[in-house]
Length: 290
Image (cartoon, rainbow, N blue to C red; front, side, top):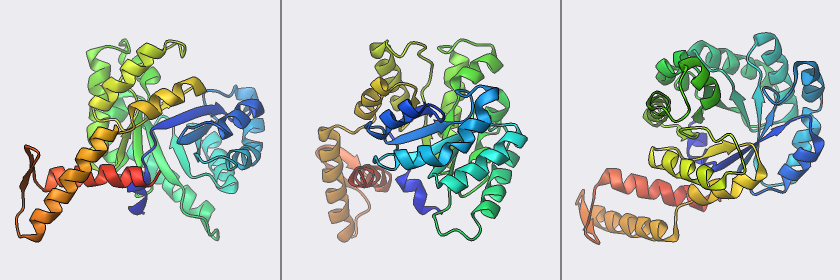
């Protein structure tokens, strides 16, 4: 399923409680690249069964829009298995695996999905591990590489802060975020997430600044909890026209040089080798899919 990795270019992933019909309907018309139907933190324990039973209807509503449809499942296995059953029945595109602290979790989810998908004709459901603990950060490489279903990975800053007993803007949290980004990159998956936490969704300037900082550290998209944040993420993680034009020039220059038997070339004063070429080409391909 490696072909899915290049398509995992979600700039904005909007969390929506799976049991809130009004929010689901609103999300269907948003400009988010993906909508995550939350069965975990946003749903009280007494309402989880209800949210799960309504998942298929929520997915049908979101299919009227253009976003990828995902579901965040609960971590206790007794709840997770039922969530995965509902996710397969509903036909979601991806599952966000909360509290991914060990590669065995991802392998077990993979095996469960393989059994549940048996006999269906839909594409295999993709996985996004949400790494939310020190234990998970220390095992990030193995977690992300545990299944070919994994197309991206993200850091859960809130829970990670509690586990680290550190503030969201601390060096310890930023370092953990960077480790997950690097692990995703090393495994040829897409790094997602923010390098900190903005409590108030109304503080748009702080949210933009954090998104820009996270992009500079290697993240290629992030989740949000309010529709007003979607535009900011789309804007920050969207390459500028100047960046795209430069990428086109680099690709054209390198391919012309390669046709002449050269492995590098100078384009507009920039040294371009295969690594620069591949980065520029990936940038153009990811945008052409939108």
